[in-house]
Length: 307
Image (cartoon, rainbow, N blue to C red; front, side):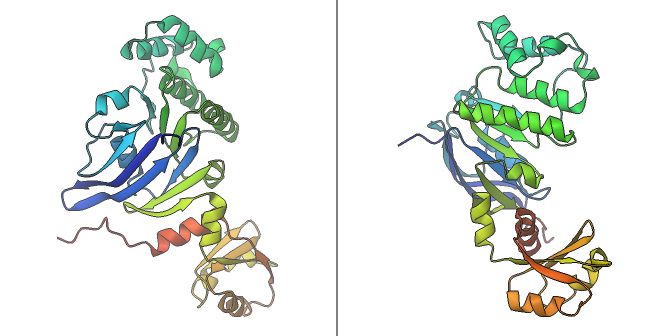
């Protein structure tokens, strides 16, 4: 049996009376990309920091590459590449200088060769002497990824790595992530983009510290129990507020000139939309976004502390 890249059980972190991560269990296999999703403040970053050894859990246990999560934190850190939400390199150094600094921090014996290889792999060689502070958001993220993988980690933890970058840069970035996974790297990546979630091999959805869904995107949508309809017609996109108030409608949202509604009871949903005869209704497949909005809507908010 292949050793799991990451395996944690009952992982818990509290700050005072607030439980930020609540008994999370997560298994990640080598060469797989797991999308880590959830609303802001749901505990994603805290979970990533516990896995990579930056935070000590208040409860729970686990292993990373067969090493104990608590006892082997220093050894684990040497095998992990962690990319934070904000750009954390030196803006007054060039790309090459930044990578050389990171290589020295890791104590790489072949630092020059490692930096050159990383520049080539991430398409940074032509910009190697450009100051990091002058880079666009997409190129900064590419540099940050190059720094993360410079020491050839076997685990890659990415915290909203493509926030604020353009679609082409996001696609290029994800091509690199899939190339790393093909080489056997285990990847856990937090994201708010549904199209990125669908590019992952599987998904973990966390809200208010609790794991609410785990599996492939198709499996999670199929297990949601949601039924969807799309409406087209004059002013259909302006009906979201009215539909949202009707029995049988769980969510309603405008998409361009159309309206998309979801509910758990197909018959009740059809009765609700029948009150809008000027709109043509057709059955539609529920989306991953529908599922996550529904999960977030129904999840108990345990981040609120009663004083």
